[in-house]
Amino acid sequence: MSGADDLARRRLRLGMVGGGEGAYIGGIHRFATRLDNAFELVAGAFDVRAERGHAFAESIFVARDRSYDDFTAMVEGEKNRPDRIDAVAICTPNHTHFPIAKAFLEAGFDVICEKPMTTTLDDAIALHELAKATNRFVGVTYTYCGYPMIHQAQAMVARGDLGAIRVVQVEYPLEWMASAIEAQGNAQAAWRTDPKLSGRGGSVGDIGTHAYHLAGFVTGLKAQSLCADLATFVPGRLLDDNAHVMIRYEGGARGLLWSSQVAIGCSNGLRLRVFGEKGSLSWWQEEPNTLSYTRLSGAPEIIKRGREDLDPSAKVRTRTPPGHPEGYIAAFANLYAGFAEAIRARRETRAPSEIGMNVPTSADGLKGVAFVDAVVDSHEAKGCWLTPRFV
Ligand code: NAD
Image 1 (spheres, rainbow, N blue to C red):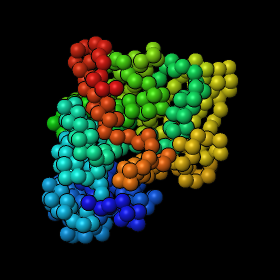
Image 2: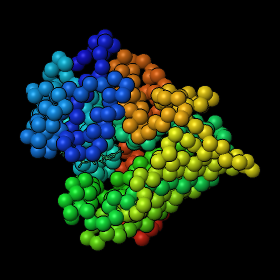
Image 3: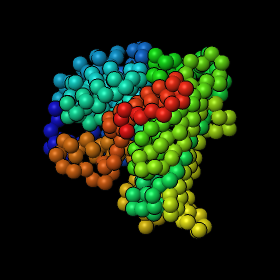
Image 4: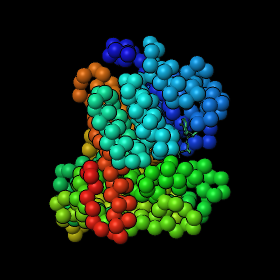
């Protein structure tokens, strides 16, 4: 394995599983890895169909001898190379995350895994334990905590600008699955609506997990119990396409989470509003460069990304001056910058710098899967209040 000295003189070497031709999130990962020059993509098993994967590898200039038929061959091919990859990014459908992550962890690689981390709670527990046992880093791509204004919101809540939190409203509505597109050849919708491939949650696993993570990330609150009502509006669909979840947080705050794949008119409308005894905050993913803050009896203040007086955690995740918009790719790149710093710091046995702190890991992935599990259990028990097993 490459030592700390070697690491100081080069970028981290990344491999990717999934993310081939026509795939969605793999391309976003590749954009994100390039922004800070912290990674170079040198290996992959990019497609479930090997030949398509090799053609794709060629198109993005990954060497033929490091384009693998599948992830098992990739582990075998990489593990004894002197220039082996440092980490693998897993950009495949949910049901494959666990076996792929397990194989790479057991071979001593760090892992960057898409959410939801696994399709079952048992697998999530096993993966989190394996990360600890192998002393490997597992980052989980909860994209939205990459935004600088989300870090600003977290800092403001933590320093008491809102006072004690009373109400947390979070919603993630999408419209793209408002009709049965899974039956009309849409590959992404097809696996997302198959419980064997997606897990127990439909909308709640796919996007509810993002909303749940974001609410917890900003407020620092842990769920005490939840009560869920799931619906499947599109005929023939096997998983929920709409979820309403009431959440009671430790300390008495109340939360309401809505995830929907059938919300016509909504593109990527992730929105978080937090109300405390002294003030409130509001943030919307489609306008991510601003945060609205209102003090008790005050007028709303629009806080812009890039301002000099923002929290260091927001400033370090900011690339351009205020007024030059930054967005989704930059937020994803902030996650990757954080993963790179976390990985380097561990190898060099030092504390990470600001960007490498507070990054989502397998502990967060485990909480996300526990949330999905509790939501589906609650719904199946006709909306009884349940405590997620990990919060
Ligand atoms: P997709 O269907 O667009 O792409 C999946 C890719 O994985 C394809 O290239 C497919 O060939 C490949 N693949 C499937 N099984 C494979 C295997 N065993 N080995 C190698 N390659 C394999 O899916 P997507 O929309 O990109 O979603 C992928 C993952 O990313 C999912 O877990 C999803 O929940 C997650 N996701 C996360 C975000 C985010 O904001 N973080 C956004 C979208 C999707």
